Image (cartoon, rainbow over the protein chains, first blue to last red):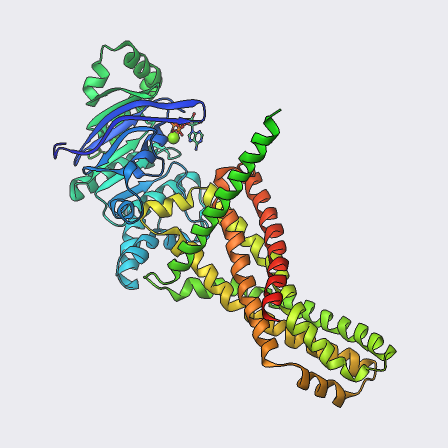
Length: 268
Length: 261
Ligand SMILES: Nc1ncnc2c1ncn2[C@@H]1O[C@H](COP(=O)(O)OP(=O)(O)OP(=O)(O)O)[C@@H](O)[C@H]1O
Ligand SMILES: [Mg+2]
């Protein structure tokens, strides 16, 4: 494995009972770049992410993270590996007996020796960045779906991870908010240089953020290419997928033109 | 024809699996108590949840159990002209048996079910997975404080139960029915030995361990779907946890009494 790849999935297969979900996934993920996994609902994108995290073990194949096979380690070594990840679950998975502030502060309190003052400042800064100011004392049950997602994001970003795994970070956010989230990704990645893997349905907007796009179809990675290559692909299946999900292209075109008029700074 | 046997074998294996998993669960949770970072706040919170919030229930059950013992004891013993040993009868039944057992049963119903449901909901809503992904040991973070709090609270609640029960017995046997006050106290003092107190303490510690172990374990593995999935799985696991730990308390009570008496 060359240094260029941070995560490498090779021949990963996984079945749940009789249902074969992954049928030999090969996916190299390049260091320092953003790889977006797209695909229809129920194709196994979340399952794929859980393989990278070592939460699900493959029936066959290898999941290499920095040269270590996640599927073959456990206990302390797995824990060590996970210190490099920042994770946002599809369901956000906030701790529902902790307030928003405590949720975001948890990784800092448990994994660093930072003092309360520093933690407070750091969390407050993230809250401000994600437009969550004023909700620090609310509990997850009192938040909207989009707010939960943003709290989950804030929590994942706290420890400045090397690798970010995001399962649908912008689902449930309005277009303006999701554009802001993309901007935050873009800025923080430039600053911190992390590798990110994002599962998203937000096509075509996510294409602007992605360095590489991988299409998961029928248990395999059908194509993994840059957004432009993907959009120009001759593969009938890829073409069909693109045209299907871009059905609302006119809407988002108009929308983005409108917004470009208002504000020139945005890439999204 | 072989099917029932195969099913029985399958059940047996499943049970063995569950027991093994529960053993590892206990081990890792107890080890978690000694792993840094040590935080006092979660333990205090759990002591509040397990201990302080059960105080009222324990107080009332203790009082009424003591009172009924006084009532029954007074009339029964008087038939044999032995009402002077009422104090000893009440004290020994409370300290050796009823105190630890009833406290443990009340705590199971009051707290064990809540622990199982809480852990189970955290499991099915991926909160435990999230902890693992943040490289936070879920045993140390979630379960160990509950064990510490249980081991602190249950013996204390048992002591409260006993004291309130003794006073209840005194109230009914002496004040209400007019037994001899000096005889009640004297017989109590002379019959309760340090061994009885020790047995009471050992029992309450073992029961605390059993309650937290069984209830947290049932919640922790709820996603394996032994009892169905989702909210239904949690609710069934909770019922199961309360039943298993109540039975386990009574069995353990017999075993400990047998060994220590
Ligand atoms: N723990 C599990 N047990 C059994 N089947 C599962 C489990 N997890 C996922 N599956 C199955 O695997 C398939 C893929 O699920 P997954 O959640 O990865 O889909 P997805 O691509 O993330 O879809 P979406 O875009 O809707 O989130 C589904 O058919 C699902 O039923
Ligand atoms: Mg998914």
